[in-house]
Length: 71
Image 1 (cartoon, rainbow, N blue to C red):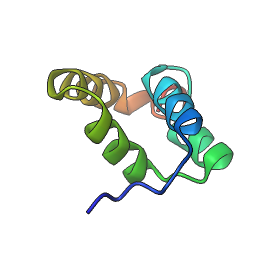
Image 2: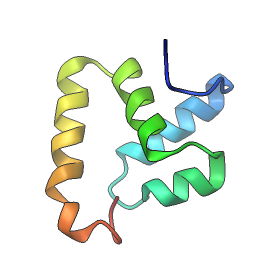
Image 3: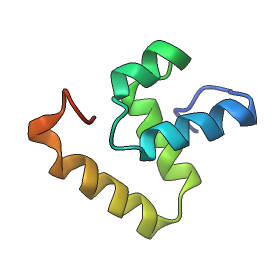
Image 4: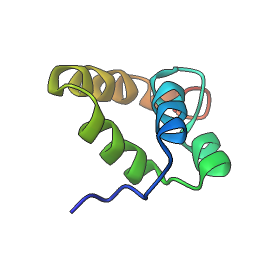
């Protein structure tokens, strides 16, 4: 069972693009699409290849100390 909400394909594409950007926070994504950080991570896990997802998560974690600016 997926933890991601039912969204139109164009919203999914926009959310993925925003999540991959280092300049858009999870809070901005939630404000615009109503998708929580946990849901964004689940969407990324379901959509990206495993290696791409792991690289993205590592990048997000590496910027953890600057969460307000990045994610």
